[in-house]
Length: 288
Image (cartoon, rainbow, N blue to C red; front, side, top):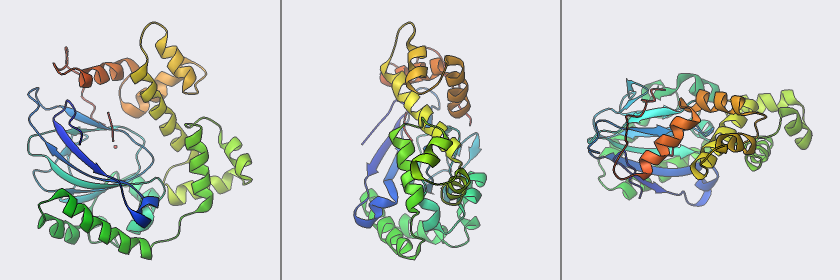
Protein backbone atom coordinates (compact mmCIF):
# COMPACT_ATOMS: atom_id res chain seq x y z
CA UNK A 1 0.00 0.00 0.00
CA UNK A 2 1.24 3.50 -0.83
CA UNK A 3 -0.17 6.71 0.64
CA UNK A 4 1.61 9.70 -0.92
CA UNK A 5 1.42 13.29 0.24
CA UNK A 6 -1.53 13.97 -2.05
CA UNK A 7 -3.81 11.87 0.18
CA UNK A 8 -4.26 9.10 -2.38
CA UNK A 9 -4.12 5.59 -0.93
CA UNK A 10 -2.96 3.18 -3.63
CA UNK A 11 -2.91 -0.64 -3.57
CA UNK A 12 -1.16 -2.58 -6.34
CA UNK A 13 -1.32 -6.31 -7.13
CA UNK A 14 0.95 -8.09 -9.58
CA UNK A 15 -0.73 -10.40 -12.13
CA UNK A 16 -0.49 -14.17 -11.92
CA UNK A 17 -0.06 -16.94 -14.47
CA UNK A 18 -0.61 -16.14 -18.17
CA UNK A 19 -1.59 -12.55 -17.39
CA UNK A 20 1.99 -11.71 -16.41
CA UNK A 21 2.86 -11.27 -20.09
CA UNK A 22 0.13 -8.68 -20.69
CA UNK A 23 -0.57 -6.90 -17.38
CA UNK A 24 1.78 -4.65 -15.39
CA UNK A 25 -0.48 -4.49 -12.35
CA UNK A 26 -3.98 -4.34 -10.97
CA UNK A 27 -4.64 -1.43 -8.63
CA UNK A 28 -7.28 0.35 -6.61
CA UNK A 29 -7.13 3.79 -5.07
CA UNK A 30 -9.09 5.91 -2.63
CA UNK A 31 -8.76 9.59 -1.94
CA UNK A 32 -8.50 11.13 1.49
CA UNK A 33 -8.55 14.74 2.58
CA UNK A 34 -4.93 15.87 2.38
CA UNK A 35 -5.55 19.14 4.24
CA UNK A 36 -3.90 21.28 1.55
CA UNK A 37 -6.61 22.11 -0.94
CA UNK A 38 -7.03 19.74 -3.85
CA UNK A 39 -3.62 18.23 -4.74
CA UNK A 40 -2.77 16.47 -7.96
CA UNK A 41 -1.32 13.01 -8.46
CA UNK A 42 0.98 12.93 -11.49
CA UNK A 43 0.35 10.08 -13.93
CA UNK A 44 3.36 9.66 -16.16
CA UNK A 45 3.27 7.96 -19.59
CA UNK A 46 5.03 4.60 -19.92
CA UNK A 47 4.00 3.47 -23.41
CA UNK A 48 1.21 1.28 -22.06
CA UNK A 49 -2.51 1.79 -21.64
CA UNK A 50 -4.96 1.27 -18.82
CA UNK A 51 -8.55 0.35 -18.06
CA UNK A 52 -10.25 2.24 -15.21
CA UNK A 53 -13.51 1.81 -13.27
CA UNK A 54 -15.00 4.59 -11.14
CA UNK A 55 -17.15 3.89 -8.05
CA UNK A 56 -17.71 7.40 -6.68
CA UNK A 57 -17.82 10.99 -7.91
CA UNK A 58 -16.31 11.15 -11.43
CA UNK A 59 -12.62 12.04 -11.07
CA UNK A 60 -11.17 15.11 -12.74
CA UNK A 61 -8.14 14.66 -14.94
CA UNK A 62 -6.54 17.13 -17.29
CA UNK A 63 -9.10 19.71 -16.07
CA UNK A 64 -11.90 17.45 -17.34
CA UNK A 65 -14.19 15.01 -15.59
CA UNK A 66 -13.77 11.29 -16.22
CA UNK A 67 -15.42 9.63 -19.20
CA UNK A 68 -18.25 7.88 -17.33
CA UNK A 69 -18.15 4.90 -14.96
CA UNK A 70 -15.50 3.06 -17.00
CA UNK A 71 -12.99 4.03 -19.65
CA UNK A 72 -9.74 3.13 -21.39
CA UNK A 73 -6.72 5.34 -20.83
CA UNK A 74 -4.91 5.15 -24.16
CA UNK A 75 -1.14 5.35 -24.80
CA UNK A 76 -0.02 8.87 -24.00
CA UNK A 77 2.95 11.14 -24.62
CA UNK A 78 2.30 13.54 -21.73
CA UNK A 79 1.94 13.43 -17.97
CA UNK A 80 -1.59 13.95 -16.66
CA UNK A 81 -2.77 15.41 -13.37
CA UNK A 82 -5.41 13.51 -11.39
CA UNK A 83 -7.24 15.71 -8.88
CA UNK A 84 -7.27 13.86 -5.52
CA UNK A 85 -10.52 14.39 -3.63
CA UNK A 86 -11.82 12.72 -0.49
CA UNK A 87 -14.48 10.75 -2.39
CA UNK A 88 -12.18 9.34 -5.09
CA UNK A 89 -12.61 5.57 -5.58
CA UNK A 90 -11.04 3.90 -8.60
CA UNK A 91 -10.08 0.41 -9.75
CA UNK A 92 -7.84 -0.26 -12.71
CA UNK A 93 -5.60 -2.46 -14.81
CA UNK A 94 -2.32 -1.23 -16.28
CA UNK A 95 -1.24 -3.20 -19.34
CA UNK A 96 2.29 -3.73 -20.55
CA UNK A 97 3.28 -1.63 -23.58
CA UNK A 98 2.03 -3.20 -26.79
CA UNK A 99 -0.35 -5.69 -25.12
CA UNK A 100 -3.54 -4.03 -23.88
CA UNK A 101 -5.09 -3.08 -27.21
CA UNK A 102 -5.15 -6.68 -28.43
CA UNK A 103 -7.15 -7.76 -25.37
CA UNK A 104 -9.58 -4.90 -25.87
CA UNK A 105 -9.90 -5.63 -29.58
CA UNK A 106 -9.08 -2.04 -30.52
CA UNK A 107 -6.45 -0.42 -32.72
CA UNK A 108 -3.76 1.14 -30.50
CA UNK A 109 -3.65 4.27 -32.65
CA UNK A 110 -7.37 4.82 -32.05
CA UNK A 111 -6.83 4.50 -28.30
CA UNK A 112 -3.84 6.84 -28.41
CA UNK A 113 -5.76 9.49 -30.32
CA UNK A 114 -8.81 9.26 -28.04
CA UNK A 115 -6.90 9.74 -24.78
CA UNK A 116 -9.71 8.76 -22.41
CA UNK A 117 -12.10 6.51 -24.34
CA UNK A 118 -15.45 5.90 -22.58
CA UNK A 119 -16.78 2.35 -22.22
CA UNK A 120 -19.63 3.02 -24.65
CA UNK A 121 -17.14 3.78 -27.42
CA UNK A 122 -15.48 0.35 -27.25
CA UNK A 123 -16.58 -1.96 -30.04
CA UNK A 124 -15.81 -5.39 -28.54
CA UNK A 125 -15.73 -5.18 -24.73
CA UNK A 126 -18.77 -4.41 -22.56
CA UNK A 127 -16.97 -2.45 -19.84
CA UNK A 128 -20.23 -0.95 -18.54
CA UNK A 129 -21.55 -4.44 -17.80
CA UNK A 130 -18.26 -5.41 -16.19
CA UNK A 131 -18.41 -2.23 -14.09
CA UNK A 132 -21.83 -3.23 -12.72
CA UNK A 133 -20.51 -6.66 -11.73
CA UNK A 134 -17.53 -5.06 -10.01
CA UNK A 135 -19.75 -2.57 -8.18
CA UNK A 136 -21.54 -5.45 -6.47
CA UNK A 137 -18.24 -6.40 -4.76
CA UNK A 138 -16.83 -4.32 -1.90
CA UNK A 139 -13.41 -5.92 -1.40
CA UNK A 140 -10.48 -4.75 -3.54
CA UNK A 141 -8.85 -8.16 -3.89
CA UNK A 142 -12.17 -9.76 -4.80
CA UNK A 143 -12.63 -7.17 -7.53
CA UNK A 144 -9.14 -7.94 -8.83
CA UNK A 145 -9.99 -11.66 -8.88
CA UNK A 146 -13.03 -10.92 -11.06
CA UNK A 147 -10.91 -8.78 -13.39
CA UNK A 148 -8.34 -11.57 -13.67
CA UNK A 149 -11.00 -14.08 -14.71
CA UNK A 150 -12.40 -11.68 -17.28
CA UNK A 151 -8.99 -10.86 -18.76
CA UNK A 152 -8.04 -14.52 -19.01
CA UNK A 153 -11.05 -15.02 -21.24
CA UNK A 154 -10.06 -12.02 -23.36
CA UNK A 155 -6.49 -13.29 -23.58
CA UNK A 156 -7.62 -16.58 -25.11
CA UNK A 157 -9.43 -14.64 -27.84
CA UNK A 158 -6.73 -12.07 -28.56
CA UNK A 159 -4.03 -11.84 -31.18
CA UNK A 160 -0.67 -13.36 -30.28
CA UNK A 161 2.04 -10.85 -29.35
CA UNK A 162 4.54 -9.73 -31.94
CA UNK A 163 7.98 -11.28 -31.25
CA UNK A 164 9.60 -8.45 -33.21
CA UNK A 165 7.88 -5.76 -31.16
CA UNK A 166 8.76 -7.56 -27.93
CA UNK A 167 12.43 -7.66 -28.92
CA UNK A 168 12.36 -3.99 -29.96
CA UNK A 169 10.76 -2.85 -26.70
CA UNK A 170 13.26 -4.85 -24.65
CA UNK A 171 16.16 -3.36 -26.64
CA UNK A 172 14.89 0.14 -25.92
CA UNK A 173 14.17 -0.57 -22.24
CA UNK A 174 17.65 -1.95 -21.65
CA UNK A 175 19.10 1.26 -23.09
CA UNK A 176 16.57 3.49 -21.29
CA UNK A 177 15.48 4.95 -24.62
CA UNK A 178 19.00 5.76 -25.79
CA UNK A 179 19.90 4.66 -29.30
CA UNK A 180 18.49 5.62 -32.68
CA UNK A 181 15.81 3.86 -34.71
CA UNK A 182 18.53 3.01 -37.25
CA UNK A 183 20.58 1.29 -34.53
CA UNK A 184 17.49 -0.58 -33.33
CA UNK A 185 16.67 -1.75 -36.85
CA UNK A 186 20.25 -2.91 -37.40
CA UNK A 187 20.31 -4.78 -34.08
CA UNK A 188 17.14 -6.68 -35.03
CA UNK A 189 18.06 -7.10 -38.72
CA UNK A 190 14.89 -5.44 -39.98
CA UNK A 191 14.10 -2.25 -41.89
CA UNK A 192 13.17 0.96 -40.13
CA UNK A 193 9.88 0.97 -42.04
CA UNK A 194 9.05 -2.48 -40.68
CA UNK A 195 9.77 -1.28 -37.16
CA UNK A 196 7.55 1.76 -37.62
CA UNK A 197 4.67 -0.43 -38.80
CA UNK A 198 5.05 -2.83 -35.84
CA UNK A 199 5.09 0.00 -33.30
CA UNK A 200 2.07 1.73 -34.79
CA UNK A 201 0.10 -1.50 -35.09
CA UNK A 202 0.73 -2.85 -31.59
CA UNK A 203 1.80 0.14 -29.48
CA UNK A 204 0.08 3.14 -31.06
CA UNK A 205 3.33 5.13 -30.79
CA UNK A 206 6.43 5.40 -32.95
CA UNK A 207 9.80 3.96 -31.83
CA UNK A 208 11.07 7.52 -31.33
CA UNK A 209 8.07 8.50 -29.19
CA UNK A 210 8.45 5.44 -26.99
CA UNK A 211 12.18 6.08 -26.64
CA UNK A 212 11.55 9.65 -25.46
CA UNK A 213 9.12 8.35 -22.85
CA UNK A 214 11.83 6.02 -21.53
CA UNK A 215 14.52 8.70 -21.52
CA UNK A 216 12.38 11.17 -19.62
CA UNK A 217 11.36 8.45 -17.15
CA UNK A 218 15.05 7.74 -16.54
CA UNK A 219 15.62 11.47 -16.13
CA UNK A 220 12.93 11.62 -13.45
CA UNK A 221 14.64 8.88 -11.48
CA UNK A 222 18.01 10.61 -11.79
CA UNK A 223 16.55 13.92 -10.59
CA UNK A 224 15.28 12.20 -7.44
CA UNK A 225 18.82 11.05 -6.62
CA UNK A 226 20.88 14.12 -7.50
CA UNK A 227 21.27 17.61 -6.08
CA UNK A 228 23.71 20.51 -6.03
CA UNK A 229 25.44 22.70 -8.63
CA UNK A 230 25.84 21.06 -12.01
CA UNK A 231 23.47 18.21 -11.12
CA UNK A 232 21.05 18.95 -13.95
CA UNK A 233 23.80 18.86 -16.59
CA UNK A 234 24.91 15.48 -15.20
CA UNK A 235 21.34 14.20 -15.34
CA UNK A 236 20.99 15.34 -18.95
CA UNK A 237 24.18 13.52 -19.94
CA UNK A 238 23.26 10.31 -18.08
CA UNK A 239 19.82 10.36 -19.68
CA UNK A 240 21.45 10.34 -23.11
CA UNK A 241 21.15 13.98 -24.15
CA UNK A 242 23.92 15.92 -25.85
CA UNK A 243 23.17 19.05 -23.86
CA UNK A 244 21.05 20.33 -21.02
CA UNK A 245 18.78 22.42 -23.23
CA UNK A 246 17.49 19.41 -25.19
CA UNK A 247 16.89 17.49 -21.96
CA UNK A 248 14.91 20.38 -20.45
CA UNK A 249 12.86 20.66 -23.67
CA UNK A 250 11.90 16.98 -23.72
CA UNK A 251 11.36 16.77 -19.97
CA UNK A 252 9.01 19.76 -19.98
CA UNK A 253 7.18 18.58 -23.10
CA UNK A 254 6.41 15.23 -21.46
CA UNK A 255 5.82 16.12 -17.81
CA UNK A 256 4.59 19.71 -18.06
CA UNK A 257 7.20 20.64 -15.44
CA UNK A 258 10.74 21.89 -15.78
CA UNK A 259 13.33 19.64 -14.08
CA UNK A 260 13.58 22.22 -11.28
CA UNK A 261 9.82 22.25 -10.74
CA UNK A 262 9.78 18.46 -10.75
CA UNK A 263 12.54 18.36 -8.12
CA UNK A 264 10.48 20.68 -5.90
CA UNK A 265 7.47 18.42 -6.45
CA UNK A 266 9.49 15.38 -5.34
CA UNK A 267 10.77 17.18 -2.25
CA UNK A 268 7.23 18.24 -1.36
CA UNK A 269 6.07 14.62 -1.50
CA UNK A 270 8.91 13.61 0.80
CA UNK A 271 8.18 16.43 3.26
CA UNK A 272 5.39 15.60 5.71
CA UNK A 273 4.91 19.28 6.41
CA UNK A 274 3.71 19.92 2.88
CA UNK A 275 4.86 22.39 0.23
CA UNK A 276 6.43 25.68 1.14
CA UNK A 277 4.92 27.35 -1.93
CA UNK A 278 2.08 26.33 -4.26
CA UNK A 279 3.10 23.88 -6.95
CA UNK A 280 2.07 24.54 -10.55
CA UNK A 281 -1.10 22.67 -11.51
CA UNK A 282 -0.30 20.09 -14.15
CA UNK A 283 -3.42 20.12 -16.29
CA UNK A 284 -2.14 17.93 -19.03
CA UNK A 285 -1.70 10.50 -19.03
CA UNK A 286 1.72 6.14 -12.64
CA UNK A 287 4.17 7.14 -10.09
CA UNK A 288 5.53 10.35 -8.46
